[in-house]
Length: 274
Image (cartoon, rainbow, N blue to C red; front, side, top):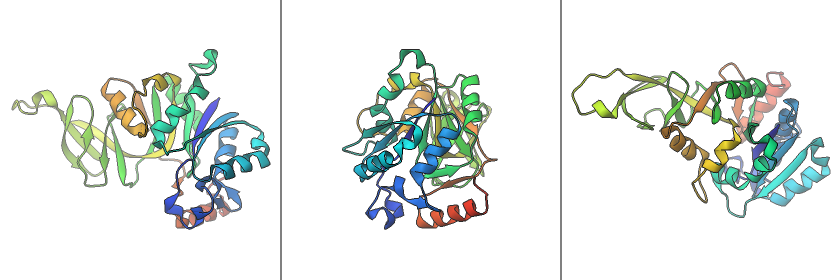
């Protein structure tokens, strides 16, 4: 099984720690974020990984060499200009398309600056059983940017913040918002005066972990710098299956600030996170 780790970002929220190193080499309790992510992927049977790099890229290469690639096959995708999540994956697509006999094998896309106990094997099984194009690990928690899913857990839009206006895909327009949910009505009846049943949408926070089928890669028609979420929304509008994997029962933390690192270190010490 293969995976990609997104590690090219500047880590501006972690300054001053990232003034002299990439965020992938920031440490929690003596272990780098990159080591934690690689070991976690390896624990789920993943032995081949590609990592995108930009900020202090050579430090990451030296670190991997010094640690014998942690016993894995590791490739590096250098980005001279930051390409964002979608552009970064598109540049590294060759890694998942190089073997014709493995084109049906889904892979994991994982942010280097998130830490969790999400069961990747269970998530991959959910992805495969539902024949999804992409599956996103999500939770019911507060965030600055939400994704909206229908009752069948299919992606239907996004929303910025608690009070932002939803941006919906497909044949629906936003109607009302409630705590934890949104609702929509079909565009075809929006101005007709006809009564239409509300479509309840779940408002969920994305966790930065994806299961992806390689057939997605040729569908990334966006060019240059772009977010993978933009592609997901376009593909969902075209009828492709972009699903939510509910991960509410698992520990998860975004390591976006020094305070988050301190809390994660405490969680490790207290064995909240193994």
